[in-house]
Figure 1: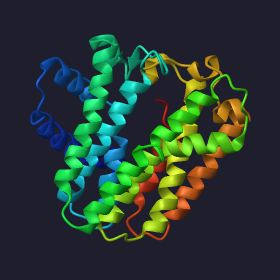
Figure 2: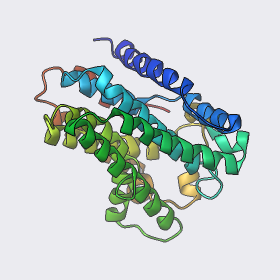
Figure 3: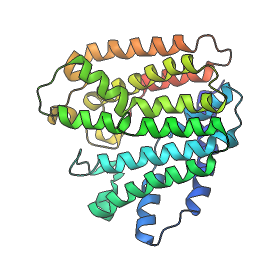
Length: 289
């Protein structure tokens, strides 16, 4: 199996669907639509849609059923990045090597673009509901994107800044929600669409994959460069954020990454067609940006 080719094949399938849907975005204001499209098309790995398509193929779920959810999750992820980059949050000027949305369109328009992308995601989900399975998948994504998931984790992140909190429980709760829940949703939505097939195994896989992704992010914040990451580095340490590196040190963070990698790999060991997902874990653990 050629991992890079298969990854790019999934990515191309997703982006074809994404760009078709972008054309249908209705807005009474062109600047608002431009800000939405700018942030959606500025680049990125599209790792959440790729995971979703790979798991769908593993479970023999038709791509036509899962693609609306892939677009919705990317819209939610993108809106979260727009808001995360704002001065009131992480105050970043660059994302993926390009100026952040608020640097191009201003803070107010960036907030509105994020709000619009979130609402557009739910518009897509509502149009995609066709029976109990798709309703279950939509409910899961809404739950994992909100106060129980991504937003809840972001709230913990903000409250932990400069707080002196060095609790492992706080760290794991923050990252399992802030980063982990959307990655977990990517693995579980195809299961929901297949009537909860292999739900528990894919849940274990998704939880550990999410933690692996975040530990790697924490490591890259102190080991990579601005040119490779496409955004500022050392911001976690400068902001006195609670991370795997600040709590366990660089070597300890690498040990945690290895643990989550092995646990995620074990969770999908019984699937016959698991080669791509295992290679994806290798890619996440070894990435430099």
